[in-house]
Amino acid sequence: MFNRSKTWAVVLLAATFGAGIAAGWAMQAWADDRGGSRGRRGPDAMVAYLAGELDLTPGQRDSVRAVFARHRPAMQALWESVHPRMDSVRRAMRDEVAAQLTPEQQARYRELVAGWEQRHRPDSSTEKPGDAK
Image 1 (cartoon, rainbow, N blue to C red):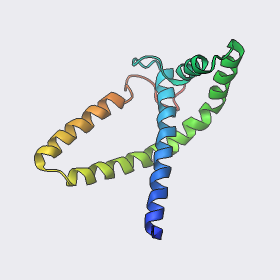
Image 2: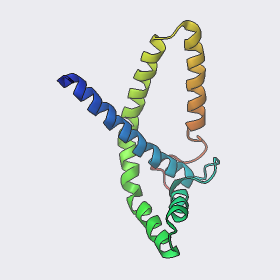
Image 3: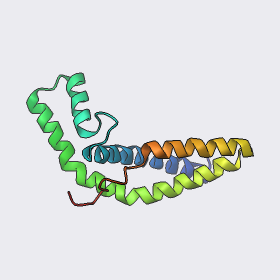
Image 4: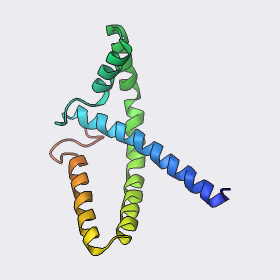
């Protein structure tokens, strides 16, 4: 049976996971709105996906797109409040993982992390969340 600290750890892990999903979705929507080059993503991609899966009418597509637009400020505010904490937890996790590895594995792990960060880093030449458009 779980003791209290294990239960809290599981709850914290689940909450972090959920916040990560929401933040990732919001960040991807933001990246797509600034003209991301990785293909079609974000609200328009979600509307297109739902339109294909649910056979949405043009009016329904417009309504669903409006729902995403209406909630975007809240999602962006959530991301801005969660992002620094997510980065802190991510750094701690990476440090703890690295501590379990051999020096050779640590070097490869740093390369993997750097590659992931490069693929997911916002382009510094474009605007950031909260910048005026």
